Length: 103
Length: 103
DNA sequence: CGTCGTTATATCGGCTGCCGATACAAAAGT
DNA sequence: ACTTTTGTATCGGCAGCCGATATAACGACG
Image 1 (cartoon, each protein chain N blue to C red):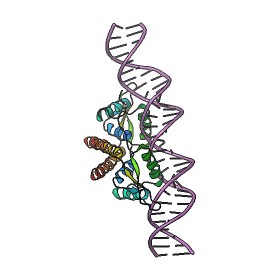
Image 2 (cartoon, rainbow over the protein chains, first blue to last red):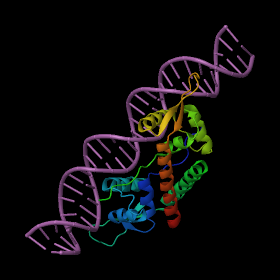
Image 3 (tube, chains in turn green, purple, yellow, brown):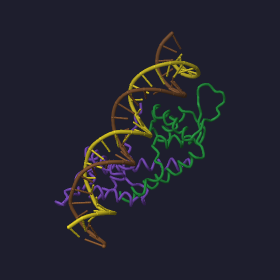
């Protein structure tokens, strides 16, 4: 018994959600992630726009009412998305704790 | 410019490597992971034996000279595997730090 | 001695998800 | 005028996890 409880986020999705605590558009997300990780993680366009679609479907982000700006589409995290990210942070802390205990 | 530096381990692979700081056989790895995560993560047989094969190919683990025991096959982490896991722990710490800074 | 649950290894198909490549186009810089 | 940057989007390939399935030895219990 014992199915695997909870959701596991990929690195890309985790950082996308973190980026969207304030409204931001796709390209801005890429830059923010690159900045947050000091250039270590560069999310490719394929990953980003694919992930945005699944996150919208899951209701973890929503489209932000952007001024009738031209091409940019802005997104924000939802309350549900926030819950997911907080849970993920707990999982990550467990991984770190287990790693530190052993190494 | 800017390829994504470094390797990202999956949760299963990370825990398998952590389990093998001491020689252990496949089934024992499953149990150890379940124990380490308080039952949160149960690695399925398909994942486990698939991962063991790729880890052997990459030289991150090796087969341990097990006494001519019956069916069990034991494995241990290599120096290279240890390096990979340490790097992964650094990456995880970065994820936690970024999450804590924002949430 | 027979049967059942656990221990133990292994494979396969399906699904998800990341990536690189490619495409297109507006805006800005030179 | 030309190039680079900004910006969104799709597609095929590939890696990896999972559930299902198969096989079999071992121990316990009646």
